[in-house]
Length: 544
Length: 65
Image 1 (cartoon, rainbow over the protein chains, first blue to last red):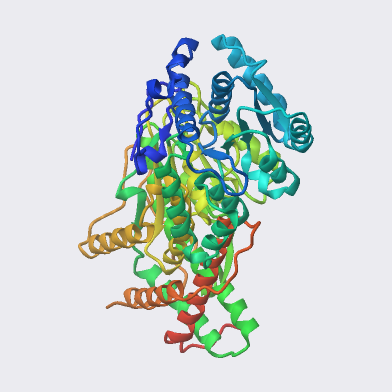
Image 2 (image 1 turned 120 degrees about the vertical axis):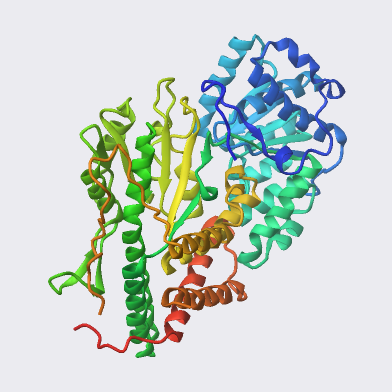
């Protein structure tokens, strides 16, 4: 998949439901009466997207079907991704419903967000010239019970209830009761993470599908391995019914070769080392029946086998990074940041071999091969937050690839932070993002997100690099169920990793064939000041 | 089949067996699904690693002191 950036200041969003399933009835602004919104002089991107969401919500409400048996209301969920414009959606829906029904709409959210919602409404009102003051009220979730009680006492009604950060509602019984009892026939839920927990999923699915919450709870009460399939089924139902819409900011990038997942073969020495580690721990495990000892041994085995695999990946990562620098890109690369002392492998002095942190080894490898035009910044879990922050800022602020810091190495633990790495200026250099196999499926989504948004110099290239090793096979199998879950809630980016372990195995087979045929997978580029040579700490280590 | 392929196919068998094994754990209502799913997957891979180490031919050399 790939998305070109037409205008970095006007991010496009993609309708996930339409992309995955297609909406049963394409939205028709004339049929719903929403053509009036055209006269509000909304900007093109806001009018088109917010109008679509408001229109789909209105069609759901006006259909009269799908009333929740628990509260008698018709619910609609806008679960667009972060920054996709949900606040604009609900404001437009609220104004429209207030005008249509002649009653004000009520929008509730967390207390810390109320002021921001009001400011946003005022800004949009000024920009587009519509008046929301008598049509929309804002309140905090905390105040909802009192407002509902008062309205019910006075016999007042609202045209619509909007709930921003709606996933918080089922966590608080008083808020949930207030929503159930609110004198409003329609509810628009906003949440970028709507089915995060079983409790939230049961609440939101039951409301938008018009089913009893207890029935949905039972339907979702399946073994955890079956959850992605069940969530996928309910999400599909909601898309088909038109009770849910999800817009997502696309990854402004493209997958690198091999469907984004590169797999490199172990060489003879690495294979022998892997074999030695596995058979050493096999002997230890088979020599004890003590479960605690076995557990400790497996943990040590996993650490060691993973460190060996990462060590084998170092040269390939250095190659990949330098090849991107050759193409005039800056590079962010993610990996592990832990050194492991081997119980099996020995160094040249016969002492236990130390398998250095992957990122530290990549940095050393790069420093030997890059010329003076490049600087490498490496963040580390052992450094202070401030130091890591200044390194990331140094990378973000170096505008050109020919000078300054053009490579940033980051531990997986930093994947979800540092939003300033999202390049937004028009002269931002082109970027490539690479990674080993991350620890969690969420990291797999977060990693390409860094720097890829609004990258104005063309799409960001993204690759996951791995070895055809026992460790990386295990890692792929560990994150695959999480990727399947993220696919089930409609993540377009997760869709691009469909069949992760199958792709891994296909690419591993291809790599083994190339290795057997003697294909040289290493590169030597003009950018390098000296030919590639091994950086593995344990490359010359003796196996026992 | 060389050593690497033999080990890997033995490992793949164990992983497949663990991933296909029934999952008796109960869901926790307020713990994110993703966390629960990944914890289960980690447990499966751990069990596969243990089963793999219990089955393959062990090293014939002494353990390091």
